Image 1: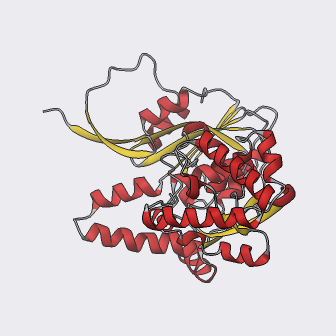
Image 2: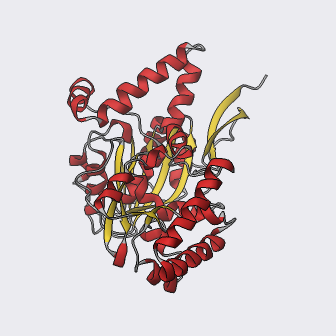
Length: 378
């Protein structure tokens, strides 16, 4: 009997378990070099094959590490390095962003960075298979609280790092990608081998050096308000940390749904979907209402990425007025993005003519659709 092995891969943002036959591999045509042998022994032949598809590990321009310390990365010669490979999981790196930033600072544009992580999704699959039923769910819950929540909270963070040294943290795929993009990298390839997620990224610009990244339940989003002024809109967190840096990545990978939002957005957490369904995530926006950044009815404040999708004339019209909590979408119920654009145009034209009477009309129409026609946020 041929042995059946288990392998995971991503399909549409989901982790899929596959059965593959353990078929004997033909002998290699040439003997592996010392560095290739080291990579194969640590990460496996499949990972070596993936890495070799993007860079020649035997060439002097490729540096291969297995380190959690950015001090080792400081040895990179910017002038002669074209690829950096690190086989150590980023879960074991104490200061992940600092590690990525040092790689960025010590390399030139278009330099490849290949690394790996045990993502939250793959970790859960591993633990489900490791422990018996019921016990595995309890273990996953405790593992998530201690290795995911504790490192994010100010009053438990120091305790966690004192006990673990920052190793074996739980990190989602969305956070992994978001950290890379915030540190100036563009992800060009993703693969899963065993329970590890591998990424191939390319340096495209400098890091943003976010000194105060948001991890907590309350999240401030940078949006465009009246006269194009930048405002911070507050919501309860529904996405994994660093997800805000993935707008372009998600736009390139996913299409917009009928609500004008991204389809199958893997950045949204399970609890976040519940909050969005009942608008609980938007309760902190009442502070923006009291502050005067928003009014009750109006077009939603947009991120820079979404603004790039809008016609210039509509953007100019949008910036003449304050955005609002209840958008025209819930009154008109458009079926695609183009209809959303026209819905907003009609609202703004009406508001320009009669002001508050337009808001009253749109508010009650939206109220009827939400309460009696089950219109919901996503």
